[in-house]
Structures are given as C-alpha cells and as structure tokens.
Length: 596
Image 1 (tube, one colour):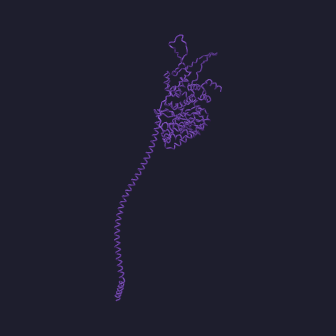
Image 2 (image 1 turned 135 degrees about the vertical axis):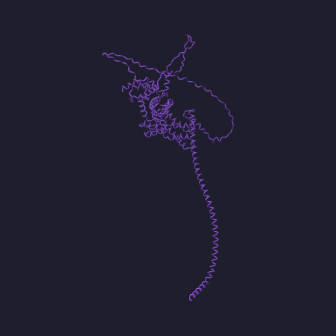
Image 3 (image 1 turned 90 degrees about the vertical axis):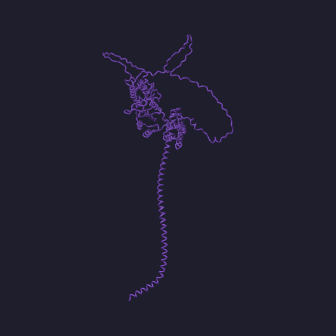
C-alpha cells in the first residue's frame, strides 16, 4: 500500500513541477523559435556564404589560371628579356670590337698612307732632310679674321697693270777649271796649212783636252847578277843580291796591285768578279780563287795593325756605335739561303779612327764583349742592347738627335704639317752646332754656347712634345714620332753637358755608308771568315777616308813596310792612318829602329 502512496506523491510532485515548468517550457518554446529562426538565418547565411565561397573559388580558380598564364607569359618575357639582354651585350661587344677594329684599321690606313707617301718621295721626290724657315712660313699666314670682317669698301679705284721686264746682264763665265799640272802632257802641234816662209810668229794658243787610257799593268823585273869569287885556298864564293821582301811571299802580285784590288772592292765597291773582267780587257787573266787568296794573305799581314787600331779606338773617352747587316753564305746551308750577320762599328770621332767588328748575331752580348773594359760616353740609336752595355759597365749613354728629327721630317713631308714646329726647333739646334764648327771653337767654348743657347730651345721643344702627346687630335705617324722622342728625351739632350759630344750619330752612319753601297754590289760574303777579313779591311780603308789620306798611296806603303818591320806596338803606331806620314821612307824607319 505504501507503494501507491509513494507513487501518488511522486505524481503530485511532478504535477507541481510541471506547473512550475510550464512557463519555462513556454519560454523555452520562445527560445526555440528564436533559435530555429537563428538557425534558419544561419543556414541561409551559410548557404549564401557557400555560394560566395563557390564564387570566390571560381574567381580564385580563374585568377589561378590567369596567374599561371601570366607566370608563363612572365617566364617567356623573362627568357626573352634575358635573350635580348644577351643579344644587347653581344651587340655592344660587337659594336666595341667594330669600333676598336675601325680605329685599328684607321691607324693602319694612316700608316699605309704614310708609307705610300714615303715611297713616292723616295721614288719621285727629294731625299734631302733640310727644312727651311720658308716652309714653316707657309703655315703662318697671319690672317686675322676679325680685322677682315670689320673692313668696309669706301671707294673704288681703277688700277692699271703694266708688266715690267727687267733685263739683267748674263753672269760672266769664269772658264774651265785648269787641268792638274802633274798629269802627263802629250803635245800635238798644229800648223796652218797656208803658212809661208817669212810669216812672223805672234803667239800660240794652247787648248787642253783630258783623255784616258785604261789602268796600266807593268812588270817589275828584278835582275840579280850572280858573281863568283875565287879564294886563295882555291874555294869559290858565290855573290848575289837578295830579293826585296814582298808583302805576300812567292806571289806574282806586288804591293801596288794588292792595294788596288783591296781599294777597288772596299772603297769603290767593285766585286772581285768585276775586277777580273776589267783586267781581262787589258790582257791580264787572274783566277777568282787566286785573287781571293791574295786578299786573305793581305789580311794576315794587316792583322797586327788592325788589332792595334781596335785598341786605339777603345781608348777614346767618347764612342759612336752603330751596326749594319751583311748576308753570309754558311757551309751546309740550303741553296739560296744566307745567314744574316752584323758589322758592329765603333768610331773614335775626334781621333778619326773606326773599327769594324763582324759578329754572327745582333745580340747585346756582342758589344758587351768588346766594351767589357771600356769606360766613357757611348752614343747610339735607341736599340735596347746599348742600354745593357751602358748599365753593365757604368758608361753614359746618349742618343742621336738626327734619328728623332728624321721621324718628324718624314711626318712633315708625307702627312702632317704640324711637325714643322718641331723641325724649326731642330734646325735652330743644328744651326748652333754649325756656328761652333765654323768658328773653330774648342770643347769648353762649345759647352758654354750650348748651355746658353741650346738648352732653352730644348726646353721649348720638350714642352711642345709633351703638350701634343696629350692631345687626341694627332694621327698615328706624328704620335709615334712624339712618343719615340720623349722616350729617349733625357739621352737626346745629354750632348749639351760636354763640348766633345756630338748632337747626333751621323759620323758613324757616314762610315757605314761605304758598306751599304758595297753590299748592294757584291750582295753577300762567301763565309764568316771572309766577313771578318772584310771588317779588317773596312776598318783601315774608312780610317784613311776619315783622315783625308789617299788609300792608293797609303796601303802599298804599309804593305811593303809590314813585310819586314817588327810587329811591335810602338812601331805599328806610325802606320795607323792618323799617324802615317807619306814622306816617311822605309830606310828612315829602319834607321829609327836601329837607333832605338
């Protein structure tokens, strides 16, 4: 029974709770409606959001597709830009290369035009390097444009022109130069065909005509009688004079003929084969090998004198040095091939002696070996070998002003007239040197004049050279001349420091000229030994020219004396070209030796 009661009580509690819950339920229902409305709005909002998201996704997908397209296009544009950039770089490189090539071609063209003008001048023009002030005045017209512009015509005047001819008296001819008095005269007397007995002689006119016979060969026959003397003891003594000592023992050629052959080749530049043909025309036939052998024997005789000549040259305080080529046939060489050897030439300028030294190369070691003990001044061109010689031995090197001047002279006459300014300054420097020579000044006076007058001109020339070196408005030939001169400028102007130094190296170049002429005629030397023998003979022959000695008188005399004189330096000194006396007889030389 308790269970129903309990259940009923629970029912009553539930009814009471329901009563309490009813408003809550109603309130909950209201909340449920709101919630449902909110949920419905949220659902609608979500639906709208989904639509927006779908639209956004579509837009994003479209944007993605467009971005992919843009990216692809950007990649293509980037690759294209890179290609264009590379092409532009290449184009720039090509343009730079083309610009450089054009500049090089322009310089080559300038140089070729310069060389063409040089060749045309060599063929058709004057060779002289003289530059007159009148040439410079052509550049100085002194036209002042402003003054001309302000001029005005104030009046007109008729001007009549009348040609005036000046009649000058012709210059009186001084007549022919007299023929030398020492020549043999052959008189031919011409009488008038209508001369009659009783005609009175008034005077006679003499008309001289110079004739020529080929050089004369003659035979010197030494006749030596032989005598027999009977002695008291019955023996016999034979007596006969000894033969004079000959320059070349057992040789049919005497001293004068040997000298003539040497002089004809080394002074007159006649090859031996031409001399042989000349001799044949007068009936004397000499084999080529025989004539070559004679020259070799002459060189053996002259060798001690040439060695002494070398020593005397190297005693000089001041040397002019240059080198020139000589083609030489070598044993075992291919047919038509020659070796290019060199004559190194050392000139004792004031002593008037020159020494030729043949070497097989142009290496700087060659002059170093010759000048290993030399101390003094050396003048040469800008060849680097001379720099090494000067530094190694402590010598003072100066360069040749003529080499520098020659470059401007070539530029002026072939392309660029602006070189005239430098040439005028060079002319003034050389004019000062000529004044000193003509006045017979000593070395101290020459030095004083150079310091006073030449130094300011050198300063002016140096300033002009440096100014134009910095200018871009000059062609390659003029720039090359300026660069060459400034490179050796200190060595060029060094000549003013001493009166005994020369402004240029022309003296040794003149000494080489004979070799250059001979080289054109006989083309090559038969061997290195032959070239060395030629160097010995050139040394003596050119030294004779420097001293104003007739080699046809000097050489026979020296050959005859060397045949019997002792080969001692104090004896050979008298036979050097600068000491030789033509009136000195062999007999008096013997007496001098015996007395000593």
